[in-house]
Length: 371
Image 1: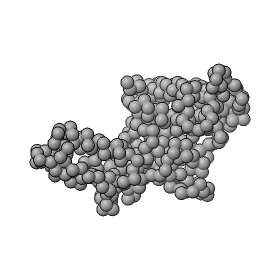
Image 2 (image 1 turned 180 degrees about the horizontal axis):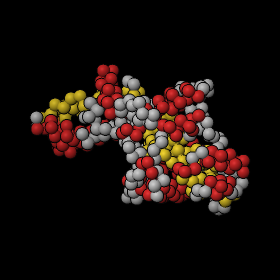
Image 3 (image 1 turned 90 degrees about the horizontal axis):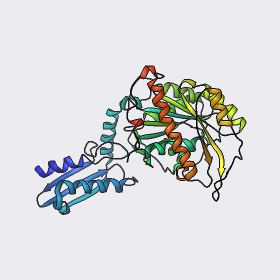
Image 4 (image 1 turned 180 degrees about the vertical axis):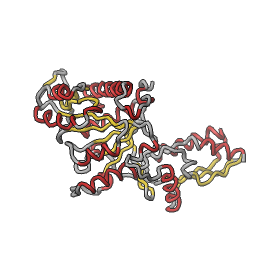
């Protein structure tokens, strides 16, 4: 009995990286039958196809070794998949923690009252908004923050393709967002088998956005990045209703004059919570000599920032060939500086009372980078 308690206590330190809770609380530990001479431990995973299975298995083995020492080698460790009944019980547990509410706000606030919403918007398509959304999220995660991305660009969703997402895990009625690059991702594109057009009117878009927000088990979050559709349509208005508290906007444009002109109209919609402007594809950097060529024009981002009375957060160079912007030395450095300024702007706005209805210290979001 003593060994069993030791093992259970050790297994409570094993966290499911997608659900954010320990495997004992989640009901994933089926059997603990151990004694001084050995024994058996069985863990049921939500799905055997989970890409994080190896990590969970390694964490369980480490926990057993810490609890039992050399005796852990004599314990038979089995990993199986949950039955339909067990998945239903797990979904019930998650729903109890994520209970439905009549509040118009997203249920994400109920379990993450201090979460910051970072909405990335643009005036028109084709300016790299989704690419920047993904890279900003990954940059924040690399600094130790708990980050999720909600792809609110229902018609033009591209997040799954950008980061190589294959699908979401559905546990009964709850969806678990896949975790890639340390970030939780959710997009309507995860539920489409082919690249088919979405032919929906406004009410269906609103319903889908709420579903992606509320029927997903996000777990603990410090920041939720919203990849908004371009322009100022229905979904942009829905976001204001779903995420009214601690929501901040970032406006993306290119240097080109037409893109900048349209971006100014989109930015005026959220002037009081607009953190600043990011000029994407600001230049092309020669890989050999480092010279910068501004082939897309010059000054669009600064012109928009000045017109809206907000800072120019940074100029991110164009990167060809796919992959993460963060992995390019020039774009990565520019994005790191953008994240620094974003965090400084959020701290300044909250300190000045710009979010008067929700005055709280910024907490972990402005912590220094983990060593």
